[in-house]
Length: 274
Image (tube, rainbow, N blue to C red; front, side, top):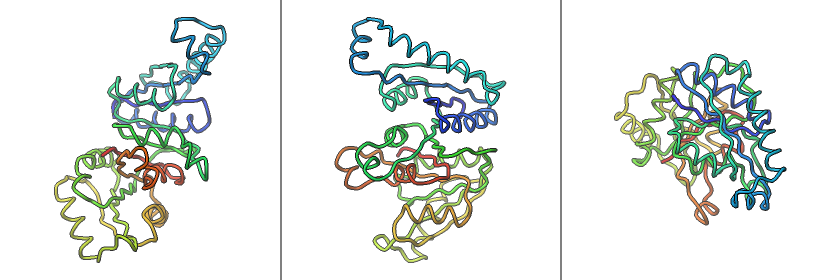
């Protein structure tokens, strides 16, 4: 976690994310890249593409530069290496491009979440980044004082396809000195007897060196409810899941546990791309 990207729209939620990113960077000797995306009207985008500088564009850009400069002087960033980027692009597309170009290790974003029709048809920028980002994404929904991760819930079916991203999960947990609370959610449609579930989990973790962990099986009506209820039950500091990054109709009809958690969990959620 040496290079941390923090997208900001200068909202309170974005500032909550920045303060946590600063704590993570400070503990790991990392640096922060602050990113602000200017999503301009269509006509302004055409002007940029044709090389013209409209007064309105320069006004937006100069205002963003001034606000970023003020943010870089914030006390939470004192002593850290911080750089800034301003781009004219759709937010989630720009975040992904900047992340890839700069070999980002972790994206930390604030999110308001979404519900109802907005969640179904629009989706938040955080949700879109979670769906597509190769780098782990940490979503912050509320202000947190000290970001101490003692109990880190990681929910999975512990299939073979999870093994590659799970290495990053273990690294994340070990860096924070967290106990990795591994949980398999038993639902009516995917029910496994306890001995079967335990064998699956024990075989899975035998390939990894985890400093502190426990194996848990939790029964609930669906996976998302199970994760949220289990996290509440043990008073977890962080929830982690893997995401397939499904697109199009497959995503629409099947949904995504990671995106649902981003929208509905008040606890921090970190996602890892399969």
